[in-house]
Length: 439
Ligand SMILES: C[S@@+](CC[C@H](N)C(=O)[O-])C[C@H]1O[C@@H](n2cnc3c(N)ncnc32)[C@H](O)[C@@H]1O
Image (cartoon, rainbow, N blue to C red; front, side, top):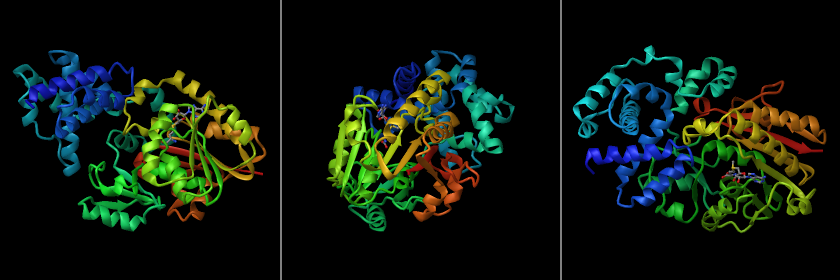
């Protein structure tokens, strides 16, 4: 593709993504479906450019006005250039800029001059907001929680996430899966905390790989794996994944139960549950029962009340722990959407808790970094439900033989009450989890 055609396509995609009407990943997928002729490298360039624009939106909004031509084209030029810079820095942390030759081929003289001016800007001279590229309502809670670690977290959030795999232990041992991948020239390392995880070097294509096709591996962030591990679902038990979505955690739970017992995968979105079906078929699990519910007080929930051994509530949340993958969320969420989510989260947790039998385990989890959606929900639930005893997540993880369990936790007197994962500390997405046992 001619450089200018690619930059024009990037500008078109940027225009669509910046309406914020749909999640950026859906916008990108639709663009690829509508433009089937695009090659693999062009797709990568388009996706990385638009994600870089979303990540660095405040900086680019500050730089764009001094350029010429349509605004989206200027943003696309900056997105492409900064993506190249990130790539170059990954190979050599001292590098300041990546190659500009291809991009230069798309630019006219004025654009070239303008890009040179933008390239000359010293980051140290920028305002704080142009360096962190976060909305103010998010900056305050991050600084309050992280203190000196705020800037390392900003850096981590502005990079793309590694590709983590979960080995389906119902089908394969982790070591054998790793060896099989190595034979297919896919290098991986075992994940530091999850006993099921492999972290790929680079971003290999998996869809046609025999290990993927036969369900021996799934793509799943190590943090998500730890949430499923915390449930500690065992053979022969009755387990509910209350907000199962496309079933990422359902599959991990089912494998941990070795395809025995009964695992209900509930969700209000039949559409999301549909996406679970092909994954379920690959996984070889026969203990999973997906069911769309109308709302959290559905009759089905009432019928199962008091009968379930373990319940996972992977609640709908702001997703602000996943900004590496979904940078648009910082612009699509706002204090009002968070307030609405908090009400929903409390209602779902309350209803889901009714399912548990005495001695049963309840896990509440989010991929948010906001205390409102996390500790505050957990503490309000504990206060309202003395029949649920909070467990120390640090102890639960240590029993599950997770290395350095305490370093994954915060809160409570011992600092180990809740799971609290951060991209800059743990190289996972940002996750929270609280665990209770019913008396
Ligand atoms: C964080 S996502 C779940 C992700 C999923 N557990 C996974 O690992 O792939 C939250 C899910 O909650 C669902 N949800 C929203 N409101 C709900 C409710 N009242 N009851 C059950 N599920 C709900 C959403 O449809 C969404 O799929």
